[in-house]
Image (cartoon, rainbow, N blue to C red; front, top):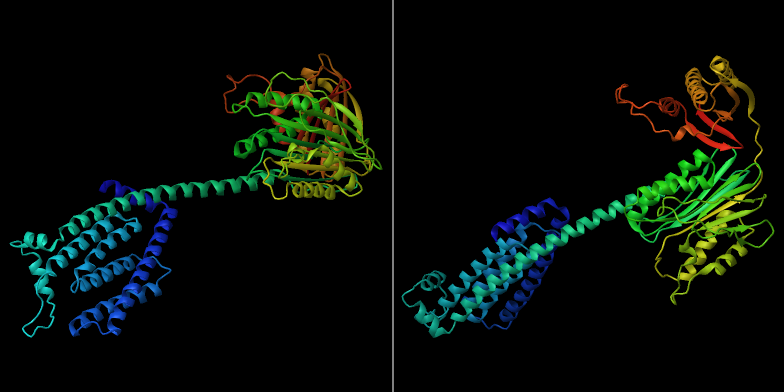
Amino acid sequence: MVNTIFKYKKTSEQSEYVKQLFRSAEQRINFVYMIIMIAFGASILVYIINNQWDDTRFFYGGLAGGFLLVGIIINIIFRKQAYPWIKNLNNVVMIITIAVLCGYSDDVAPLLLLIPFINSFYFRPVFTLVTGLVCLLMMYITIMSVMLPYYNAEGNFEFNPILAITSAFDFTNEIQRMVIGGKSFLIVAGVALVIMSVYLSFSSRRFTIRQGELMQKNLTTETELKVAKDIQEGILSADFPDNDSYAVYANMTAATEVGGDFYDYFPIDETHLAVVIGDVSGHGMAAAMFMTLSKTLIQVYARMNNATDKTFELTNRYLQRSNPAKFFVTSWIGILDLTTGTLSYTNAGHNFPVLIRNGCEPEFLSDKPNFVLGRRRLVRYREKRTKLKPGDKLVLYTDGVTEAQDAAEEFFGDDRLLAVIAREKEHDQQEIVTSIRQAVNDFENGRDHYDDATILALSFKDYLQVEPAESKQFYLTTETFDSVTQYVTEKCAEAGCDAETVGKLEIATSEILANIESYAYENGGELELLTKSRDRRMTIVFKDRGKPFNPLLVQEPDVNMPLTKRKPGGLGVFIVKKLVSETAYSYENGQNILAIEMDY
């Protein structure tokens, strides 16, 4: 038992939170002792005022009162501290005070047994055991000695401490005195109470340590969740775009510290904007991690393909392979051509967006939804299209909005959502999102959110006017590689690219031309090269009519492996990705379209 006690003491030294619990316990028990001292002091004061003691009793009573006064003053001064010597002082004062008062009446002796019991709440078993043994010894002495005659020849009371202690250990007549005095039960009860106090102290200490460690873990978990929440808020960007062509605003309210909902918006290229919303099944940290994976995959595949159906197909395959927890994701993605207003979109089991035509009432952009992401591997997703005109708005949301409940467990529902949007349709995207969020909060009327709720609004302001990229046709063969590369060099120089950027783009162009010549054509073929510079970013687009082939999907080689053991292929594309800032591939109108971009 003692080894276990010291084991727990070591554990407490390793946990600052457990130490704080022990310090708090000491402060509480020190306060209890101060109250008891005040009560004892008040009793002694009453006796003195009523003149119920003779001179000898008055002396020792005053001595006890002096000890109590010192203890009370020190406890008041250091009431907010938990110095170890304060509890030692309290025990010394109480033991001496009770022992002195026992010299006049053995009825006070049982009060000594309160001390080890109170000490048990210090949660220090060894301290409780030592003070308990001291109190037992003092009680034994007082019980034995109080039966001696302490009157002098003149008949006055004269207490002699030395005589009291020596007579208590006079074993020749000890048993006889105990039996005669009828006090033996106090010694037995005292031993039992000390044992009980030590056990109570030990068990309370063990419980407090476990409680402290649990609270420390909870505190650590809360800290980690707060960090995770900050990371998630960083992932869900709040830098909302608002330009002459479009504006976006979004809000996500998590049911727990971190949520499984997500939204995203990002440019696919200079003329296309993607907006995404999604909802991962479940809540908490695991759902948030799966959300991050889903959001990242959707953005990567959307940039690579510029097609909503292909984006979801590739995302679904990856999630299905990497989903041991059997999560699934409902999601909606739309890619808006800012030059024409054409909105291509795919729905993977998600809520229907609300479309606000300029000057019209809001309506759901409904269609037959596809299957959710992450549960079935071979799922074909359909892409739909609609046309947006300047002034049109699109509102995306998760089921945490329409399935919010009031006190009567009634859902917020689609009708209320449409009513709020209809009321705010003339306002901008931020006002629409804020009004929906406020309407849901008012409807819940203080009820806790049981699900994450996310809202995103897109406002299409005007068609994007883009200067066309400069185009040149080549007939690609190994003999024309140099002329194509020289053309790229000239265009980079005209744009003001620095020498390092020009060199990297020359190498990237050579690798891409070799790739096209190898995979697209057997004996040469047509190549269209588009170049454009804007905002210190050089864009080069390669178009060929060869066999469909996405080089960005080729597995990257292990450059650390010896050449003799490395599988052929993929090195050229790997070099291109390392050299340039962005790469994107799509297959449209019978053409492979590979674009590279680089800042300079």
